[in-house]
Image (cartoon, rainbow, N blue to C red; front, side):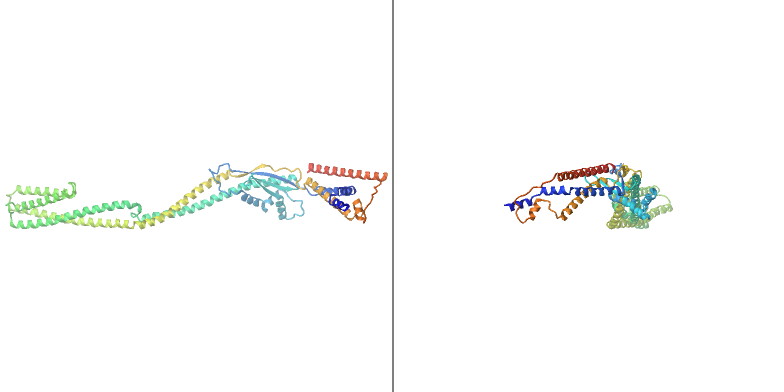
Length: 523
């Protein structure tokens, strides 16, 4: 049972042992704690201080809604901001700031301009600020670190002006570049459209009269020509009938004139005129059955009838005139018939010529109608290219007008721009070293150092300080214990030791608190 009890006690936390350890080693621990804190905290006052000046730049959206004027620049703010940052952090831009503010003049390690530019680039930081959903950039913060707070503020102001000016410059250049590109494309589209339009005009001129749009008029003209042809053919047939008739009258007249008189005893000339009248009356009856009285052939036959009747009346009015006058009168109808026959032949020739012309025109229009499908296909191909060029030109013209408006908006600084929300601050406390943080780090370092020293002291110390350690070394069981008897001198020393430990702990704690407070107030 005693052995079991001792095993249970060994597995439990030995509070008395560690309390005894604290009583014996607390001075060592406190000294190491203070030294560790003092070294770390003191280094924060030895290290060179760096002040950081920051400014918050707001990304202000365009004043004009996109539904009225759409921007013609890159809308990816993060990419554009990266491009602007690279341009600002270029050696040329940074060297201008170095020369203007005489930066790193006292830095002996930075001898060449490249070293100064690289040091300046490392001291600059740009941090993006996004919205609550972490999707859209609403602002960004530009910071610069330097040993002089005033100099840090000046450099930050210079960087702020560079970012604002470079953004306006980049947006204007991109906008003007977009407009110029669209204008070039529009000019190329205009040249292409003019070429397509010239092809259409050339095709229309080469196929004048045979275009698909002229099909209806060609059909109407062809129908009219066919009707004219039919009329001319009818008139030609009539004229040929008259020619046969006139020829028969001339032959009859010649035969009767040889006999001297007709069967009814009237003069031969009168008989011939009667026969001519009968023929003309029959011809008029035939024409009147097909045409109206205003038709030219009908009016012509009527005029011939009136003329023959007048000649007949004149011949009957002078039956007893001399033989010479009779012979002249008898020869007059023959001459008239021969003249009418000659006129009839001229009319036939004219009708045949007109029919040949009409047939040629009919063949021409029929040829146009026959080639119309192939012409329509060719015209569709040319027109399709023209319409595509026209649509492309109209689209580019619209884009060009919109781009010109967007460029004008950028030039008037009405587009997306950077606005200083928080001006460059004049830092009061250094950004590095953070002395309050160093104070906490010193406490942690002192605690670790104190624990390490106490552990090493205990590890290399062979003396026995506890009852349990003594029992563990004895091979026999302890039957009785004699309590420790301290003299008054020992008790006084022990009390002084405890008081000294508490006083030292209080002093160290007060010093650490004072140092922390001083670090907080002075930065």
